[in-house]
Length: 272
Image (cartoon, rainbow, N blue to C red; front, side, top):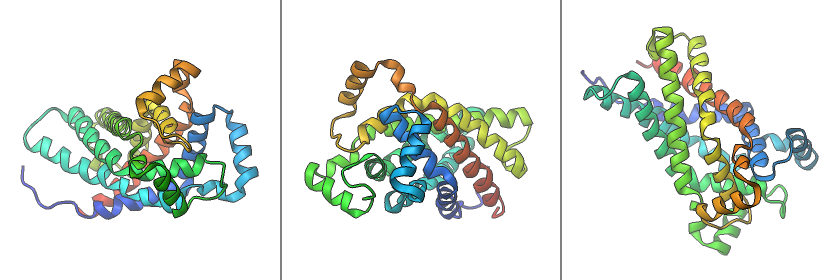
């Protein structure tokens, strides 16, 4: 298997697709999901409260600068995953579905490592009520002064596990759809890519419990370990509380994966 070149264009396409996805309601979907997971209010209540408190700003709450800085998460999804899949294929490790699942796991774990600090600050910006609308660098200064820099890595372990398992499941789903259509993903039309991305996103609902744990660990005024938050959540709200936000999680995952794999992958193929 000859290697022609490293797909450097994915270092640009990945972040660009994340920016597009977050601008097209992706950030709003995540805001609603985080509020659902941390408060358990109904979706109509959450949407109404966001509108009453922030008006049109609610659509991009926490987006600048912390959400925007997360555009880098497109790099491990499209670049690290692609490189990992290439190496697995080069050394003839596993079939297509297994290679996609393993490369998705590696890309997701690297994404979790990169994103934990900015996700922590974004979640604080979304959930804190003491200073409504404060989602700038003042949050960074306030929390670092109060808790130290280690507070930025609250939820690191579940974040890496969640992102890794999440993208592993998504890419496994992409492999299933690829087999069903009888085409490699780089042979699919844009419409087929979008459908395949949605199917992969649908399967990521499996990781909702980890998503809830991360949201609870990283919300404002919380500086406890993930294990402490886990025990407290079980004690106070029961195991069923770990399925909060399932609907919005799946909707957001389908939306995100369709854009990343569908549009991002389609554009990337034009460079090959």
